[in-house]
Length: 387
Image 1 (cartoon, rainbow, N blue to C red):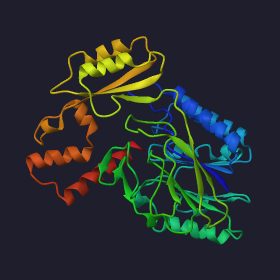
Image 2 (image 1 turned 90 degrees about the vertical axis):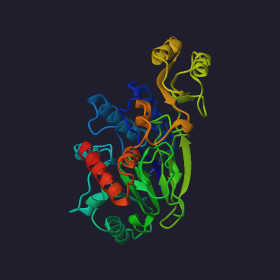
Image 3 (image 1 turned 30 degrees about the horizontal axis):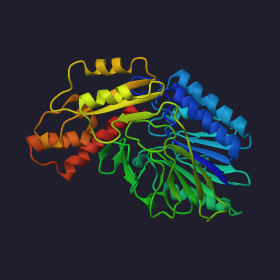
Image 4 (image 1 turned 60 degrees about the horizontal axis):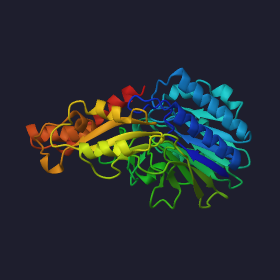
C-alpha cells in the first residue's frame, strides 16, 4: 500500500496579521501535483486541517476545492481526514455523506458506540484506522487495541494496517513548539508508545510540526510535520511523507518530499542577536526582490528605541519582504526571577513558566501538585476554546 501522510495544514493561519492564503494555496497545489505524480492508494491527513475551530467560509472553500482537485489527480485514491486539536470535530463530519462519493472519509469525533466507523478499508490494499484528536480521558480504555483487534479479524489477506492519531508522543522532538509543561505541547500531554497498542504497520501522527520518526518504535511511528511553516521557530524543512508498506508486518519505507514556500520566514541575524543598528543594516541589505516574512532578533539593554517598528517598516518599504516582528532580548545575565518582564518576553514564556516565576516570588515553592492543578486548569481552558 502506498500512503501519502500529511498533517497540520493550519489553513487560515495568519502571521502577525499578514494573510497567508497565497502560501497555503501553493502548498495545496504542490500536494496535488505530488499526488498526480505518485498515485498513492490513500492519503491520510492527521488533524489540524484548519488553524481555528471557526474557519471562514473562504478558508473552508479553499480546503474543499483542494480535496476535490486531489481526488481528480488520482480518482482511485482514498482520502482519510481526521480532526486535530485546532479543528471542530463536528464541522468535519457535516458533509460525510457527499464526501463518500469522492472516496473521502472525514472523522471528527470519537464514536464509542460504533467502533467500526473508525475503520476504513482500502479495497485490496489495506486498512486505515482513523482516530481524531480527543482528550485522553474521553478515549475508552484500550480503544486503539480494540480497533486493531477488529482489523486483525477482518485482515485475512495480510494487508498493511495504518493507524492515525493526533497527539503528543513521549520522546519526540519539540523544536518549534512552546512547551506548556515538560512534555505538553498546545495543551496536549504526551502519551507513551504503548498507548497505541500493537498490530499496526505504520502510525501516521499529527500535532508536532517537525517531521520525524519516534525512536525505539522500529520506525513505525512517525510525524509527517506541517508542510507549511507556522512560526519563525520552525527552522527546518517542511514536507509530506510518502510511505510504502509491502504487506502486514513489513517495515514501512518512507520518502520525504519537500514543500516549497513562496514566502519563507527569515530571522535576522540567522543565529543569536544583533544590536539595533546592525539589525537595521541587515534589513537594508536584504534583497529587494525576495518575498519573505522577516523577524529581527535584537539585543537591548532596556527597551527598543521609540518608533523602532515604524523605522523597520520604513526601511522595508519598496521591498518584497514584510517585517513581522522585532524580538527584543535582554542579555541573560541581566535577568533575575524578580525582574519585571517586557511584553515581548511575556509572550515568549509558556504559561507554566510564568506561574513558576510568580510562585517562586510569593511562596518560594511550586510543587508537583500545584503544577498538576495548573496544567489541569489550562487543559480545561484549551478544551473550552476548541469547542
